[in-house]
Length: 316
Image (cartoon, rainbow, N blue to C red):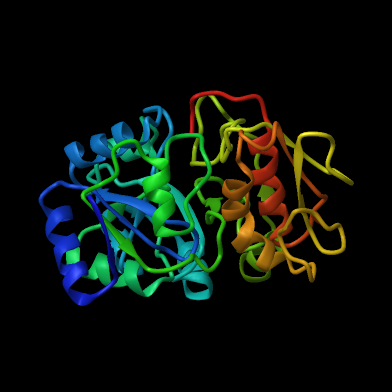
């Protein structure tokens, strides 16, 4: 196990590992992913095992170009419109699987659909093209815990890290992709992210917001408890109580602050790293978080915070 800088040599090494059925952690614009060959059942099983992820929770398949999807899923006109507008980028599209889909059925967790995205990060893009195969790549952390936005977080998160972790620096977006379900007549946002409802509706018309299905999720990020530190989390806090640490936002100052200037994009990029920093049981008994506006990417921030504060379970 090692952390290596993102060089052509490292990417070539990682591609060899992935083609042989191994796992590699790599950066995307959202969070670090734990990648495995999505066409290889054994590799996908290793992802579930490494994370301790329940087998009913589907994975996202990452592709190197939109035309890779032709052998994976049944794409309609909306797919073309959305990918022209937002790919590469933090938008995952859920579509019906082809009956002869090239990817393992394990990534779909028993569903007849598959979630696909094209990441907007030079390291992820180079790795996908070097492998020449789609990669299943959930966040590179223990199931249910805080997602990693830096390479060292992967080491902190996984009891058995992969043989190689590619260090591509801090993730730019910092929260997982928006997930949009295209298997219904009216598209449904299953998980909020950096691509907002307003942006999507501007290119394809009305969409709806889905409800969680924690016992049979159609996409990652639908379980009630997720993204959780070891300490309990208290939301919409005006100040820290005894034995708490306060994570502030804007003028609501705390020991830590998501964005002193009240910038929601900056807050999203800092969210998981600050939750990790605050998660110190020797100093505190609880993490308090100041209110974050429920608008734009603030919807994604609050979604992650609500799940971090929810009663804990073992799923992710």
